[in-house]
Structures are given as structure tokens and as C-alpha cells.
Length: 100
Image (cartoon, rainbow, N blue to C red; front, side, top):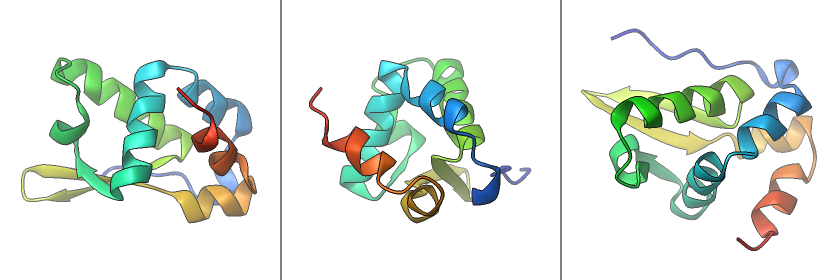
């Protein structure tokens, strides 16, 4: 299995981050990861098709919001909170503080 590509914090682009968070499914994934710390894709899929979930995680990874690592055949995801806060101070905290 190929390792996932994650942009460096210096490569985070605000427009890409906001685009990733503009989708309700992706925003819910980010909120759940913030609450859980780490979770597998299946824990976060909400019963959605695997292809749809894969797309959402790719958008989140490309924006720099999520880090995905493989543990055997399972993909474990976590928020890149520290890197995001270093690049855009307070942005993630403000987004996560908003009610649904």
C-alpha cells in the first residue's frame, strides 16, 4: 500500500482549507476527529459508500486538515491541529466552536 501524501504546513492554502470545510460531510469528519483524537475511516464513514468517503478524506488530506496513516489494512486518521494552528492561528478552533 502506498503511503498517503500530506502537504507541509507551509503549503497549506486558506482557500483549500475553507473549501474542504464547506462540505457538511467533511466538516462532520473534522468535528468527530477533534472529539475522538484518532479514528479509522470506517468509524467516520456515517454509512456512506467507500468511494464517497475516500474522496472526502482525500480533500481533507490535500487541504492539510487530516493525517492518514496505515496500520495493517486500516487507515487511521487524525487532525493536524498543531500544524493548522501554526499556519492559520485560531482558525480551526473558531470553526470547531461553531454550532452545527
